[in-house]
Length: 180
Figure 1: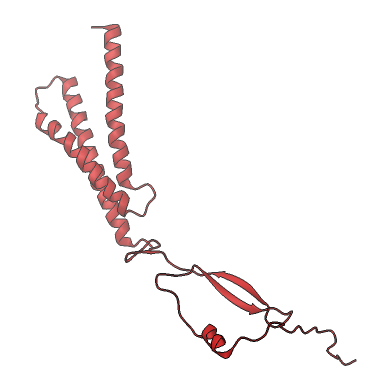
Figure 2: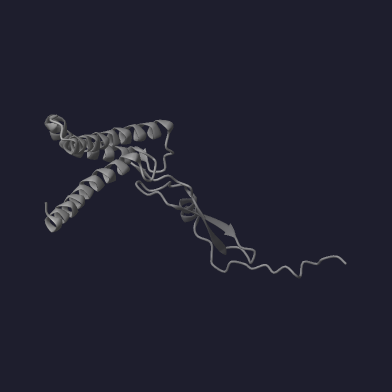
């Protein structure tokens, strides 16, 4: 049996055609407006029901967001890893210098020796405070890690400061209770 075409319905667009000048203006590529960059690309496709009817199909466009000349979606390089770890290592060394000075002062006081650590102890506190935060924040900014070594150095510095305050308070309280 031969198809007669009776099953296919053809719809005619009842609206009259626009004048030629307006049709040409509508078809002319005007380009995007200045400062306007759409995030969604609109594709018009003809619908099977007939002429003049269109379906809007939206497709997301892959696009990098740029601020100035830097992209937010930049892959970290090996240089970023090395620089972040080096800055964090410097911050960690400054904190360890402070801890070593405090530990040596504590050991010398326990042994009853007459060594003077005043210059080492006196200079290591501000160096650790400022240097740890300077290099630690720089490491956090540069390093692609979520928890960089610089962040750990800052946390260890403040943990040591708060730990020494709490430990000093507990020792002072025990000495007051049990007295010597």
